[in-house]
Length: 105
Image (cartoon, rainbow, N blue to C red; front, side, top):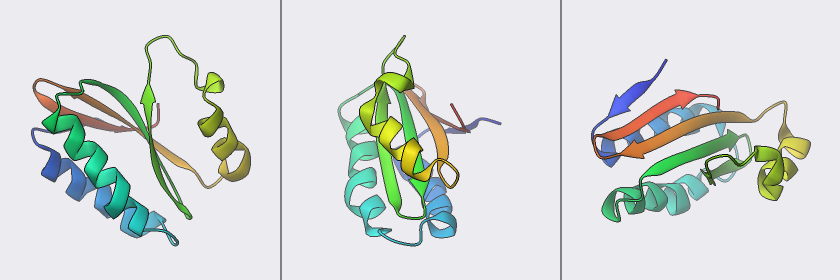
């Protein structure tokens, strides 16, 4: 099910909920990197689709390129190989009306 957020702070609160329940180590990465990345999307109007990856040992946001298979993304493939069973993925889509957040690709 898609969740829609009109502003970054609302989306970030929802993302933080997931971080607190999943990430056991390096939660600080969310506060140091992911928050700034999402705020930057909004501030700079970086419309597009993003993959947010969370696991017990951290988080990461990958920009999805139309037509690109994730198998072509070395970082994603490395994470999948190491943490595939514990990795959770969420798709973030940002456009003029705000953010859409959904589980999976």
